[in-house]
Image 1: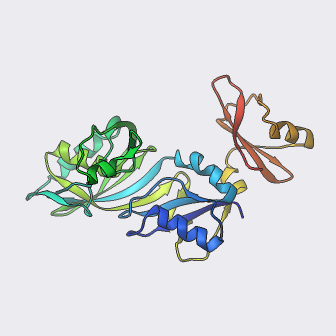
Image 2: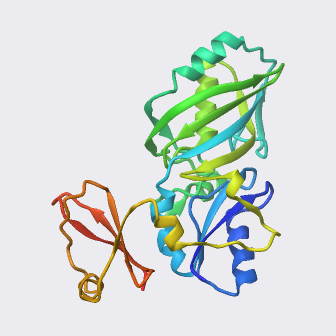
Image 3: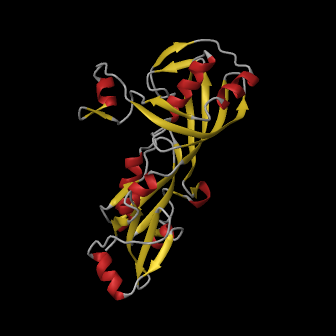
Length: 277
């Protein structure tokens, strides 16, 4: 029982809660998620099971799509509606100005990591510093916003859809947008609608019967090499593989079963990335 489970995480529980529940249902401790969703957030959470946990790093790197709701006129310490309110104000936003501002974020930029996050500084999580009232310099990350569009604007709320790179904090993006607008606002709802090729249409609810997508199904989009016994032995011993392909990854199978995923490295050769046996 190796592969991934695509969960539609509900709001109000942590990503770790989802992992624990799947672990209990399947009676295995080898379970891990591929990209944390905050307790407030809901939507696509891809979870690896048994040997499927070896796909976690690969799948975490995928780009993601979100629909975010912003409550205007409120600023909180956590940058979302669950935090302590720091400021309140009456805010009115012009629709054309909002659209133009959103469009300026179709770019790569250095985004400041929110203080209430699990990013570590000197071995300690940022949210631990925040809870202790200790100020630290917040790190920045280069993130890429590939597409952003306004879906709705009401008196004190706007909703937008966005496609982002790994490591993008939507809470921080919202703060940056509001700063650019010259207003205050906070995230009141967040739905991850897609992670890589996995969408909400593929997801099951946490209390549904578990449906596992096999490693073979997940990796079928990559160039696949069905090996003979001799090559299988060489691959199992960590062979550096040469191929004319320019694909980033090569997927090796033996007897119809996954053996290894190789990645093209700087020496123009393929090296072992994950071994599934």
